[in-house]
Length: 178
Length: 172
Image 1 (cartoon, rainbow over the protein chains, first blue to last red):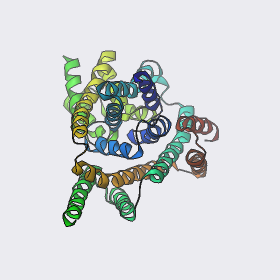
Image 2: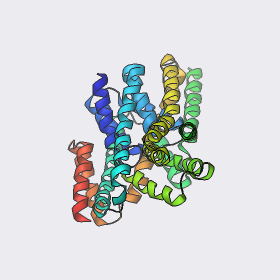
Image 3: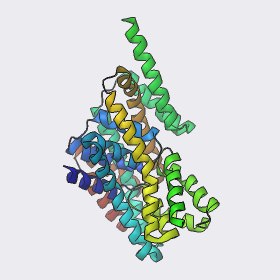
């Protein structure tokens, strides 16, 4: 099991191109859909925690996913899996390929990969939206979040904290009325 | 001594950056260029270009690369461990704490409000990525076609990336 988790996150680490969010579709595919280690809701909770805690989102996510699946050992194996490909690839690049950094083919390959990463994240949104229980209220919250971030550039941390406090207040007052 | 300084610098970077790799870059710049003078600004920009194009989390790539520049392979090891250690420790504490209070209604209530926000976060991330990715008709076609196969035909994400890279090499 631990070995399988390590290999899965090694794969995820090796194909995460362009930062933490590019990792979400890969984790969604491998951890939620294929291996069913987490439900969609649990996965969203993990991303929320990874966002509000300091440190690289990718490391936060893999540590937490690993912990949820297999405790402390799981956390360590998944995190190591995520880090190792980067570490090895970068070492190879600095030692052997640094002088070829102005490479035309590599530039073209990345021009192709960028739209693929966008497509990946859109498809993750589609799949998460499909499996998540959505109501008119949750949809409104999602839309407001997008507007706050895209138009006003507000940090996700504040939005998450406000949503958590607001939600607790809402459900508590609802409970008190009953 | 350099190794210890390198480790402490990246420990600080890991502990005080919120929101992932890109949010980390100003901190890295401050530590490596302004405070310690390990790199010049030009070297830093060159490294960034490579870090963004290389697979893997931006934070890990930067730490490994900068560590190597400053102190060789051991520099890489030390900087990378430094940058991930705070994350691992903090996440384990939170995970442990949350699993204890799993049945508390408060935790459940909080997450019910947070989940739609996270969906919104991912949508915003896709908008940011799309802005940089869709630069001409060809890139839009690649994106739309791949989205169709990913969302409706169960194309594996890794395969999608490989295919897109190969197509990119030929059409651009």
